[in-house]
Image 1 (cartoon, rainbow over the protein chains, first blue to last red):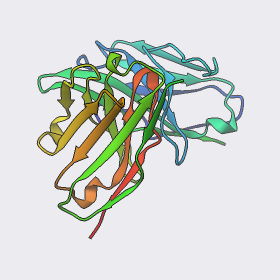
Image 2: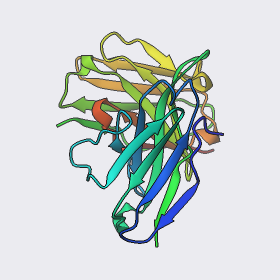
Image 3: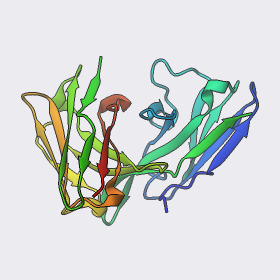
Length: 112
Length: 113
């Protein structure tokens, strides 16, 4: 059971816009920056979004992140076949047990 | 450019220990910490802990406390993660994560009798 809740799957057709949600709480998303990762099969995760909505250099502006309260979203516009991958949200969680980096369960994006 | 290069795949028997290394380059090692994250086959990502690159301060996930030790060698800019008392469910790809979202290539650790 992940601390952050993501839908297990999402899908879209080429050119479409899809969004992936990530729900947390006041101890994590509500107070810390959200990160989004893309993981292709057999590869290490790649940073897509940091500090809620910033893109590292080299990440296309088709990818965007947003946050409101204790939820965050990743939007992918102009969907392409190479976007088919697993997507994870991540955030630092400040709880009584200490500071932990927590991940969502992942969302498998299928490009139809 | 920032690079994190991990040691090769390991095979261990249940009850044994494993140490995975993560050699870094392209940035000032003492300015950032290293996290370790693992991924069991077909599963999601699981954070194991973090170690400071400057003073060796550690923060282990509760699940791994008592079984994991993270260390660093500032002379070689290398981080290490040792996991003891291995079980079959420790079979996973282990990643080190450095600054600016850079990840190592992953190290497969297989625990099997």
